[in-house]
Amino acid sequence: MLATLALYDTKAARALDARATTELGGDAFELMRRAGRAAWHCALRHWPQAQRIVVVCGPGNNGGDGYVLARLALEAGRNVRVVRLAEHSSSTPAAQRACDEFRQRNGRIETFIDALPPADLIVDALFGIGLSRAPEGNAKALIDAVNVHAAPRLSLDVPSGIDADTGAVPGAAVVATRTLEFIVPKPGLHTGTAMTLRGRLELAELQVASTIFEGIEPHSALLLPDALKGVLRPRRRDAHKGDSGRVLCLGGDHGSGGAIVLCAEAALRAGAGLVDVATREEHIGALLSRRPEAMARAVERSEDLAVQLERADVVAAGPGLGQGVWGRVLFGAALGSGKALVLDADALNLLATRENVSLPAGTILTPHPGEAARLLGMSTQDIQRDRHGAAFAIAEKFGAVVVLKGAGTVVAETGRRAGVIGAGNPGMAVGGMGDLLTGVIAALRAQGMPAFDAACVGALLHASAGDDAARDGGERGLMPSDLLPRLRRLANPDALR
Ligand SMILES: NC(=O)C1=CN([C@@H]2O[C@H](COP(=O)(O)OP(=O)(O)OC[C@H]3O[C@@H](n4cnc5c(N)ncnc54)[C@H](O)[C@@H]3O)[C@@H](O)[C@H]2O)[C@H](O)CC1
Ligand SMILES: [K+]
Image 1 (cartoon, rainbow, N blue to C red):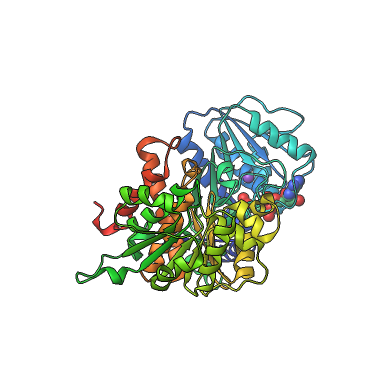
Image 2 (tube, protein in one colour):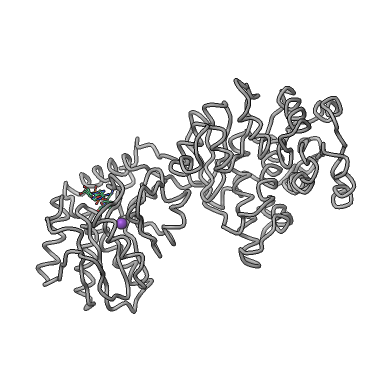
C-alpha cells in the first residue's frame, strides 16, 4: 500500500459539501463560516502584522468565504476593504448572508473600477471551484490588478482563474503567495502551471464528519514521501543478484553517450541486480571507466543485441537513442523482443511515428509534455491544459502505463486512479534528468514491482532525490548526476536516520 492523499474533483467536492451541510442540520452557512474562519486564522498565522487587508470577492460562495474573513478581520480591529466584482448582489443565499453580516459591522464594500487600494495583504475570494469560463472584462482586470499589487496574496480554495479539476488556466489567474484549500485537495492544483500559481499550499478540513466520504470516489492520489517507506523494504538476507533483476539500457547514438550512462547508473543506484548497456562503440570506454559495474556492449545492428535482449528482464530504451537508422532498427528489435519495456525520449518519438503498434503488457512510457503531444498528435499546450486527460489518453491509445513528466508528474493506467507526484522542483528541468528516471523505473520493475507501482515509486524516488539535492545546494545548477548517491539513500528508507 502506498501512502497517499486523496484528491477530489469538483463534482465530488460538491457532493461532499452537500453531505457535510446535511450533517450540519442543513445549514449551508455553517461550512462557509468555518471556511472563512479557517482562512482568517491562516492569514493571522502567516501575516500577523497585516493591518490593511483588501478582500476581493466574487459573486458565489467563494466570495462568501471572503466576506466571512472580512468580518472577522474587521472585528479584530484591522482596516478592511472589500472590493467586489460587480454591483449586483451575491448569487447564493449563504454568500448573501456573509455579505450582510459584514455590512452590519459597518464593513466597507466597493465595486472594482480599475485599481486596488493600498494593502498589506490581499485575500483572493473571486472564484473557487465554480469557475465556469475564462475571466474576461472586469474579472480579468481585477485579477490583473491583484497580480500587479505589491502585497502578498492569500487565495481561498483555488487561485481564481484556475480550473480546479484540470489545472487549466483558460485566461487570467491570480498568482497566489499561498492557497488555503477547503475540505479536500483538488487535482488541478497539484499538476502543471497551477503548481506555480498556487504558491504554498495548505488544507483546512473544516472538521467535517469522516462518514461523508463514504462511497465518494477520489479523482486521483497524491503520493506522499512516506510512500517510499512502505514499499522499498529491506532485502532478504539471502538475496542474490538474480533476485534483483537484469536491466538492459539501450541508447546513446553518436554524440549522446551521456544519456545512456546516466540511465545505467541510475538503474544500478535504484537497485537493479545486473545492468547491461547496448550503445555505440565510442561510448564504451567512458562508460566502463565511470561505472565498471555496467556490462557494456557495442551494437551496430539488431543481431548484436540478441544476447543482451534475451537475458534482460526489463529493457530501458530511448535515452540518446536518436531517430536515425541505428536507433530505429534497435528500437524495432526491443519492441519485438516481448520483454517488459520502459520507453523514453527518442523511443517515444519513434513510437509516435509507428502505426498500429502493440506494446507488451506492462510497458511504461515516460513522456514529457512535448513527447506526449507527439504521441497524441496535438500541441504541448493541449497536453498542459489537461495533464490527467492527456496521460489517460496515451495510456488508452498504447495500452501502457504512462508517466507524464513535468511539475506534478501524473502516472496513469486505464481503469485505475492516477498517481500524482508532488515532490520535485524546477532545478530538475535540465537535460539528463529524464534519463535517470528511465533507469530508476526500469530497476524497480526488474526487482519485481508491477508496472504501475514501479512507475509511481520510481517517479517519487527520482523527485525526492531532486528535492534532497536542491536542499543541499539550491535549484539552479543542479545536475542529474548530483541525484545518483541520493537515489541510493532514498531507495533504502529503513536505513535512513
Ligand atoms: N466545496 C465546499 O465544500 C465548500 C465550498 N465553499 C466555497 O464555495 C466555493 C464554490 O462556490 P460556488 O458558488 O459554487 O462557485 P464560485 O464562488 O467559485 O464561483 C461561482 C460564481 O462565479 C461566477 N463565475 C464563474 N466563472 C466566472 C468568470 N470567468 N467570470 C465571471 N464570473 C464567473 C459564476 O457565475 C458564479 O456566480 C468553493 O470554492 C469554496 O470557496 C464553502 O464556502 C465552504 C465549503
Ligand atoms: K479564490
